[in-house]
Length: 404
Image (tube, rainbow, N blue to C red; front, side, top):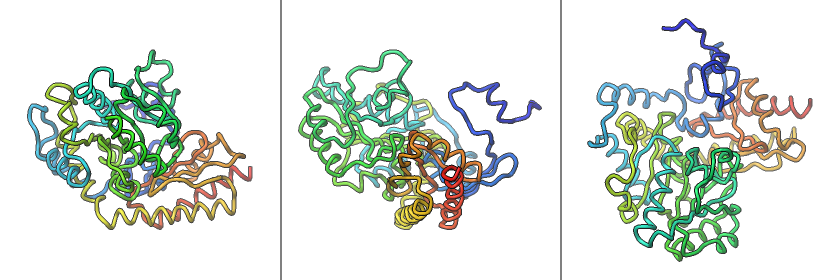
């Protein structure tokens, strides 16, 4: 074993420089708290970017990992396995879906969803029906297909020609959507609440009209619930708070609580277009990942936890409003459930990263959603005491910037 000290400086020596991690290195976590190499404690409002849905080192997940780890980690997809089948049944029982495809990440689930949408259109309506309508400021992943569908040019620039047949429209603009739809449209792809784009909720009329237009034009409605799913907004999936059902839904992040797992959900009719050999994933549906995701669903998909998410949102919002009344720094508090955004006011626009670093220095982890929004996506089980304590730290960090 190497005697090289494991420090932040080692990152610069051995890692590709596509990330710029903080100077501290976390080494352990419990619930909604983590500790770094120097045993400094942090309250976690970031949740690994809406991933640790039931907190760090949840005892049920630790027990599941140990139990399945002593049985079977991986098997090729020439065979199926019990955890994958149990998880698929729980997901279909709890949603609109009849069929499930497993992958490792949200990007992979979206890749599968977009390929399926095009394949279904080709199978049923011909090669010309291949155009995807997506939205500005959307985020769907980092593969070439998913960054092409995503509406943030900064993520696709510099990688050569983007995929063709993709149109980006303003989010929540019904007229633009009506104008863009045609017989060539194979799918509308949208997040029910834009996460990376600034914590922007879909207007009910907008999502309803998207569903109607898909029905009128024989197109599919694809909902990216990678960030909004697995209980994040107070229902197992966000679409369950609307009057519509999607044709395809993707889920990841909180589904595995940090263990890489993702799923694409769809109907029997649409699933037929991913016939044998048309798509695949070496690790997708492996028993270790699926056993953990099943345990997450068992914990999250209960009336108590889902109702608790709404209550915790109200606590966060009241606390943030109180801070803002004392030390004005944001113009709007956005979001639902435990996906919360503080949109900075004009005086501090472009400085979200400064607020993140100030909070981190005082022992609180938050996120940003672009340069103008502070984002919070903690564990769905975060104790009220940790919410309150974290907000005290956040106010101190805000004061450091506002009163500087």
